[in-house]
Length: 70
Image (cartoon, rainbow, N blue to C red):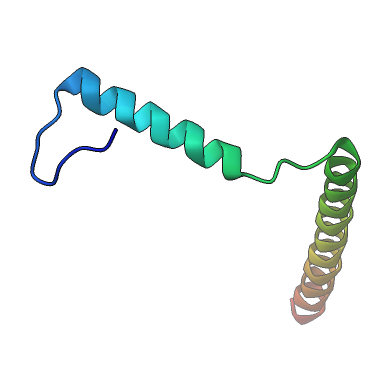
């Protein structure tokens, strides 16, 4: 059901083709399992907490140095 090269589709034909392509691509997607989602969520939360703590430590250190200078 392809379109010949150079042939123009109407708006509805183009829309139908676009939906067909989107559905085809979604079928190729690897959808994670519930266990994978919970694991990935935990990894993200731990990473956010670690980065937050690192920023807090650096900010506290810079604040302390500025107070010593002033």
